[in-house]
Image 1 (cartoon, rainbow, N blue to C red):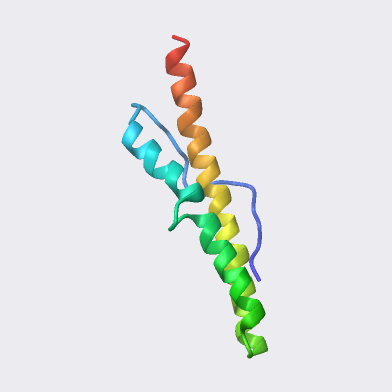
Image 2: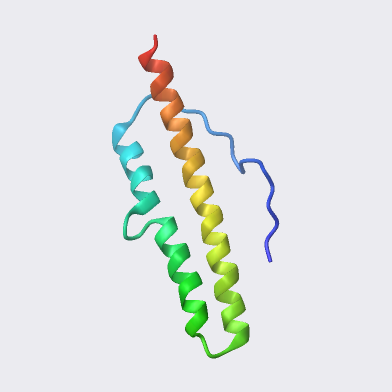
Length: 89
């Protein structure tokens, strides 16, 4: 299993706005190749897997993919906070 630590692996410092990057980050939420859909696919596939050890592996991968969804949320939150600070100046 994996261990949850509430900290970023690398510090995030946004110095200039980049709407294209923000759009790419946002598509990672609900796009066809996004983290949420990947997590749901892994967790749904575990129920049809005939081998229990592989089913457990799919559960671990699906829960780890949901952790990546949290990181995507954090990145978008940082970008959004930067845009809010620029708009108020």
